[in-house]
Amino acid sequence: MRKTKPYLIAEIGVNYYDTAKVMNITPLEAAKLYIKEVANSGIDCAKFQTYKAETIVSKNSPAYWDTSKETTKTQYELFKKFDSFGKEEYKILSDYAHSLGIDFTSTPFDYESADYLYDMVDFYKISSSDFSNLPFIKHIGSKGKPVVISVGASYLSEVDEGIRALKESGCTDITILHCVLSYPTKPQDANLNIIKTLKKVFPDVKVGFSDHVAPDETMMTLATAYLLGAEVIEKHFTLDKTLPGNDHYHAGNPDDFKKAIKNFKFIDNILGSAEKTVLECEKIPRREARRSLVLTRNMKVGEVIEEKDLMPKRPGTGISPKYIDIVIGRAIKKDLPEDTILTWDMI
Image (tube, rainbow, N blue to C red; front, side, top):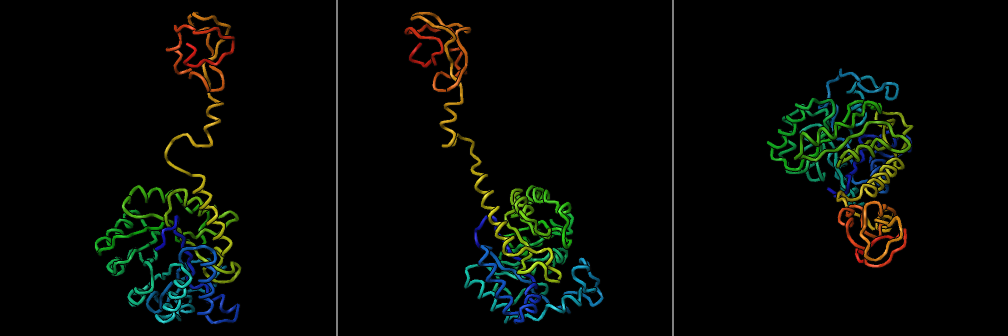
């Protein structure tokens, strides 16, 4: 995996099928087009979803998404529309992504997919829908690759169970993503403070955010997640947010992702260092804006300085007011006019 901060994943999922229909090209050509746009947008990883309808869902499972956006009534019917790819196609996509210098992964939803994806993915991504599928989690964790797992719709105790399952299987590189399993997630339901909770409770794993909030003009949701400590950020990716389908209406397009990356760089720039010191840009203002001990009257050589003879004034080029107790009681070495900024060689 790249070392970018934050590491940004474009969840292509199966959106390329809809683009293929609109552009009258093959799904494979559309998928490669998506990967190309992911790379051009400066994103770290292109991510897909690997499943077969028969192994992921029973035929009567009802829809749980916004059916005004995606009208398919059952999960089986929806998954069946988008499950034509197999090992050969994902190998082509993996090679293409790597040829463009970006990472590749795909979320497996069955054991067969998890096994054949091994040589193709830079890390495994496990869906929050499989968070209670501990045998499957252990199977993936035993493969020796980094694992990123979403924790949407989970209690904290279940998150602990999932992390334990990965560790017990030998996985040593774990990232958990705060996620709200609602499409789209309302901004008020994003609950981003959970990122801080996860970082506090599970300090030995990386924490990130998988976003289902519809993009706004400033991509503030992702910026806030990063500010709260998200090390990995995942968001659905589309080339056209107006396309019908389950994952277009809450996805980000290339411009949205570019805005997000610009925000991340701006945040890094303004956060600076955790070390409290005087910055180079502060040195002159510090000198001119701080105060020195200044005489309130003309004083002759030999006169002893009293408290009433001193007033703290700008600039801070003389004796600091914090040394006033040392200055009081000392004698003047030479005649000095009123408003003289005292320095140590004068007393």
